[in-house]
Image 1 (tube, helix red, strand yellow):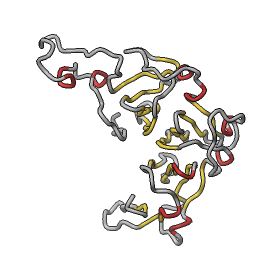
Image 2: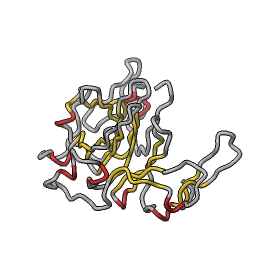
Image 3: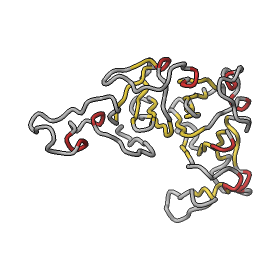
Length: 239
């Protein structure tokens, strides 16, 4: 993302052609993008226009301003507790989004979207469903219990932003405020990185308490380290 253009570095690293002029979409918020492992195209979350778009052609491009297709969202914001559930069960193009942020795509072509406090998914047939419906929870947010998993139906996320897929098992990972959660295949959530505010610090047995700062004193396990202001998550090919 280069100012008001999205550009592509060619495999030979000898050219960086533009593939979209971003004046055609909003740029006042952090852009979230991902490349689909299925079709190799770039998908973009358009926060202020309540939609998900994908690049129509990765090049060469004749018209930079119109080189995109809408994948999800009508361009109309969905209000909380909408009677039609923001279009769940319908085609994603006719559904409404709230505040789309992070986006990730599995090797099976399932598109995951962090939409305000919820996580939604678009199946390969183009239909959208809410996978984690935080806004339907009557309870106020509270941290998950330490070291345990919890059903996605009972979790209220705090502020999910970035998403990523583990290439080893195709599981969805969610950056929620200061923790990273993994969704298992049976739709349970477990924290894999970041110490929640309600969890004790696990200190190494060979050091007395207070010798090192909290983060240095922690066990070295990712779940025992406090994340201060995480912005993004990504996976290498070995997970």
